[in-house]
Length: 384
Ligand code: COS
Image (cartoon, rainbow, N blue to C red; front, side, top):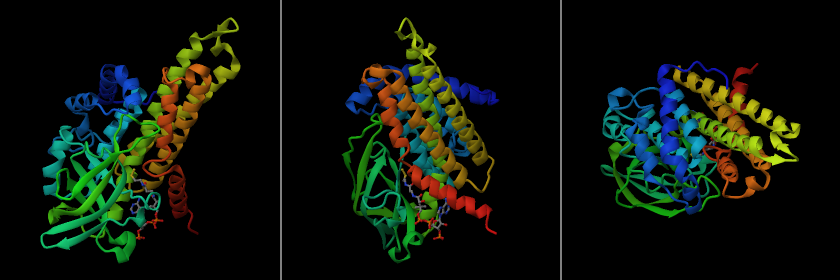
C-alpha cells in the first residue's frame, strides 16, 4: 500500500476501527449473512468509540473531522463486513441533509443524538417508480395549518425501522417537478408513518432495507429542511457528499476480498506447490492490487477535496463511487475464481464479498447514473 501520510489522528482511527472489526464483527459475519440478521453490537461499539460523530461539528457533540475520516472508518469496517458498514454509512447519508441544510434549532435538536450514536438516521428518496429518475417521486407533502401532511411510499430505504430520524423528499408543488420537491425530517413514531416489510437481499444482508409508508402523516412545519422547493438540491448535495463514502466502502470490500483470496493462494497446494506460484494466479493478484490502489487514491483525494470546501464535488464524488465500486466487483469476482470451489462455497467468505459488491454498483445512484453525472460535469469545463 502507498504511504498516504495519514495524520496521527487518522492512524488512531484506523486502528480503532480495525479493533472493532476484529472483536465485534469478524466472529459473526457468516451468521448475520446466513440469517439476514441486523445486530446492534457493532453499532453500539462504534457509538461508544464516538465514531458516529466523525463529520458532525464539535458544537453539536461530534468530532468535526470530516469526510476523509468517515471514508477511513467506512473502508476499514467494510473489510470485515460491508453490510455493517452500510448501516453505519447510511446513517450519515441521513445526517448530511441536517448538517448541510438544517436550521440551528434543527441541528441542536438532532445532531447531538446522532453524534452520540443514540439515534440512527435514514435517507428516503427512492420510490417504486422513481429510482434513477429521482425527480419522478410522487410522495406529497401538503399544508395543513401548522403542519405538513405526507402521503406516499418510499422504497429500498436502508435503516428503515432501526432509524429514529428519516429525511423524506416529498413534493410540495407537483406542477414544478424537481423544483417542487422539499425535504422533511420525519421521526419514528410520527402519526401515519409505518415501516413496511424487510427486503430479502442478495448481499449486504447484515443491513436492514425496508419500505416506508406515509398515510396522512402529520408533522410540524418546523420539520421542513431549508425551504420549500429545495428538496431536490438537498438530495443531490447529500449524495455528492455520500457517494465518495460508497467508494470507500468498495475499497475496503476489495481489500478484504483480495486478502482472503491471497491467504488461500499462498497456502493452497496444487501440482506440488502453492497456487500463487503460477503466473496466471500471481498476475491476477498484481492486477487486483493495482486497481485497488488506484481506487483508494481516487477516494482519498476526493474526500480531501470535499473537506477542503471545494465547490465542484459532483463529478469527483461520482468518479470515486463508480470507479471504486466497479473495481470492487471485479476484485470480488476474481477472488472467488482464485479460490475455485472454496470461493463458491458459502463457508469461506469470498462469494459474500461478491454478493455485497453488486449492490455498491447500484445504490446511491447506479454506476450508469454516475457516468451521466461525470459526463455532465465534464462539459462544464469544455463549453467553447
Ligand atoms: N447539486 C445541486 N443541484 C443539482 C445537482 C447537484 N449535485 N444535481 C442536479 N441538480 C439540480 C439541477 O441543476 C437541476 O436544477 P434546475 O431544475 O434548477 O436546473 C435539478 O437538480 C434537476 O437536475 P437534472 O436535470 O440533472 O435531473 P434529472 O431529472 O436529469 O435527473 C438525477 C438526474 C440527478 C436525478 C440523476 O442523475 C440521479 O442522480 N439519479 C440517481 C438518484 C439516486 O442516487 N438515488 C439513490 C437514492 S439514495 S440510495
